[in-house]
Every structure is written in C-alpha cells, then in structure tokens.
Amino acid sequence: MLPSALIEKYNIPGPRYTSYPTVPYWENRTFSLKGWKSSLKKSFLESNSTEGISLYIHLPFCESMCTFCGCNKRITRNHGVELPYIESVLKEWDMYRELFGETPVIKELHLGGGTPTFFSSENLRFLIEGIFKTANRSPEVELSFEGHPNNTSNEHLETLSDLGFKRVSYGVQDYNENVQKAIHRVQPFEKVKLATEMARSAGFKSVGHDVIFGLPFQTKENIVYTINKTIELRPDRIAFYSYAHVPWIKGNGQRGFREEDLPGAKEKRDQYETGKRMLLEAGYTEIGMDHFALKTDSLFKAMEQNTLHRNFMGYTSSKTKAMIGLGVSSIGDSWYGFAQNVKGVEEYQDLIQKGIFPVFRGHILTQEDLAIRKHILNLMCKFKTQWFSLNEYFEELPSVLHKLEEMKKDKLVELDSNFIRITDKGQSFVRNVCMAFDLRLQRKKPETQLFSMTV
Ligand SMILES: C[S@@+](CC[C@H](N)C(=O)[O-])C[C@H]1O[C@@H](n2cnc3c(N)ncnc32)[C@H](O)[C@@H]1O
Image (cartoon, protein in one colour):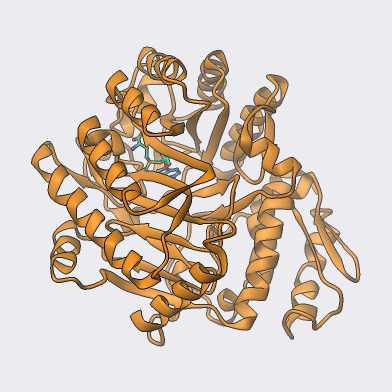
C-alpha cells in the first residue's frame, strides 16, 4: 500500500500513551485519596532504598501565551506569585514525606511548565534546596528543567548547574517568522544559540531542543530550514513532536491562525519524514516515537541498554517505580496508581494551606491494566513486545492479536504466536498498534474527540 493510502487509513484520533490507562479512562469514581496514598507508600517502601524516586515539579507561570501550547499554564507578568507558589510546593513535599517515615532518595527531578525560567534563580535555588533539605541524592541523580530560550539567563544556568542540574530542554518549536507569529511565540535563532552556548559553558551535559511539525503555515521548506538551524547548534537531544491540535481543551485566545492554516495529514507526515532523514544524516539516532539523540546522550544509551522508559514527560532514560508530582496539575505515578493535582493555582494553594492533599482525580491499576501497560510501554519504547502464552497477561490477548491482522497485512507489524514487532514502516503508526492493546478504549469509544490525530 502507498504511504499516502496508509496515512489515510490509519490517521485517527488516538492517545500518545504517556500513561496506561490514558487520563480520560481513569476510573475516578472508584479512586480515593486513601487508595493513592497507600499505593504510593507501597511502591516507595519497595523501591526507595534500591532505585530511589522521581519528582516532577510543575511551575505553571508564563509571561505570554503561546497559542499552540497544550500544557497547563497561567499567564502573568506579576512575579510576586513566585514565592507563595514555591512555599506551597515545599509544603506539599512535606506532606508526602510525612507519609513515608524514611528519608526519600531522589534519583530524578524535573522542573516542567509553564516556564520554569519565569522564576528568578534565587527562588529556584530556594525551591531545590528546600527539597533536598529533607531528601538524599541518589549517586546517579539526574536533575533537569525546561527553559524558554528568551528568558533563560546565565544566572539561571549557573545557579541550576551549581545545584546539580545537568540537562535542559529548550522550547524552540520552529524558526520561521510566519509560523512563530501564528503561534504567538517570536523567538530568534540568536536567542536559542546563546541559551544553548550558555548552558554548555555552565556545565550542562545534555542540551535538548523541542521542535514541532504540523504547526500552522509550516511547510516542508520550513522544516528543512528549522532542522538545518537545529543541526547547526548540535543539541544532544531533539524532541520532534507532532503538533497536538486540541483546541477543545485549551481555547483559542490570541491564536494567529485558522484550522485551514494547518498542514494536512500527508503533508504533516512528510514534514516528519523530511526532518527525520536530515537528523539521521547528521548523526542522530531516532529514539521511540518522536525523539532523536546523539550517541553520547543518556537517552541513546538507555535505548541501547533497553532501559528506555516513557511517562507523563515523554521518553526518559531512567525509570523509578515511584514518581511524585508536585504543583498544579502534576500527575504522580506509583506504578500501581496515578493521581493528578487540581489545575487552578488559587485552589491548589488553598488546599495546601489547609493541609489537604490537592489531588482531584486518579486511578488505581487493575491486574489487567498492569499487563496492558507493560505491553504498551514495550511497544512505545522498544517497538516490540512478547508473551509466553495466549492468556498469560489478560484474557483478551487473542482478540487484540486478531485486530492486528490488518496491520500485519499492511506490513506494519510482524506477528508470531508469542511476539509482535513493529516494522520500520510501521513505526510511524506505533500509536495505532498500542490502540489495539488498549481494551479500555475499545470497551468505551469516546463520544467526543478526546485525542489528537495519530499521524
Ligand atoms: C510546556 S513546554 C515548556 C517549555 C518552555 N516553557 C518554553 O516555552 O520554551 C514543553 C514542550 O511541550 C511541547 N508542546 C507544548 N504544547 C504542544 C502541542 N500542542 N503539541 C506538541 N507539542 C507541544 C513544546 O515543544 C514545548 O517546548
């Protein structure tokens, strides 16, 4: 089948599988805070002393609205919000610590946003020192943050490097002026170049760039230009994301484009293939669904050593059983369950003030969920998975395999009695392969569109 016919056939709304079950399929009605706390305590006690835990801290503020952004953020120019927010995060951390009765060992800590570099370096120091005042560092600790190239200063980088941060990812998105205007994010190449060089001089070992394809007004020529500029700066890793167009969630405020200005599915796929080819020629290796890394980067090494993992932040090089999410909208993952914090800053701070865990929804995984998650993680991270007997993991495995027959005919997967491997041709359709395993999605088809398109 021709690539364009395949795209037409398989381009449907589908999850990006940063979790299984996916957030819209969590069973919130049977979820309780008590259940979440006990699942987290269990995984903490099982893994803290051996592998340590991960922390994700959401810093939601941005000075201006980027109209493509699907993340939870609060737009403000009032920097008076920084300190009260950090105090709440530290108090939330204390509430979790009290649960454990053992000093946490932090293996991974990531500051996401929003824009972490909205915060002054002094306040970021206060936050990180506050966390480590009551925690130990794993010998392999990895600290990372998301930086906006327009406002990441040398002071930010020096401070964070001094605190042990060695990885930064910068939001680049696209270098073309028209595209940048449409998404309300004007950011010259020179700024990214400076931010990249400053990070290296400050001692960062991994500098990442986020680039997006499928944005409004983007063409293949735009992608060639943006990828060439990206290669010029030689970031250690590149997240080459498919633009997730989800206007029903985020609203249209300040948006400088119409639906018609978005590239079509085939054009979008072409953009990815073009960028991919250029990156491979430049010495990058494709990692999972949408990441590229130099051979010296820890993400590449994780792929080689079969330790690549995927969670709410995308692909990561290290996995811990327990991940705690602090701050508004953050999601925690205890391996046995998920929990998400409230999304409003005031509500979050108010609950913390009252000593109440700010969790508003979550899910405790069933045995079937655990088995399916394992396969979905294998497929997303290794493009293959296996089992030893047909009903070993869950009873409906035969029906899943039956659904994959069509993809086998299209040469997207190779199927055997105990394994499935996604072919090179099929890798662009990995989300579709995972959907065959997603029994929750199949049992209850969404009534409205919940997910972005798979291609
Ligand atoms: C929350 S942003 C943080 C980066 C930092 N605040 C900045 O603005 O540079 C993390 C990354 O998510 C990606 N992202 C956000 N919204 C997206 C969307 N709708 N589709 C695809 N990727 C998206 C962008 O590449 C972005 O750099």
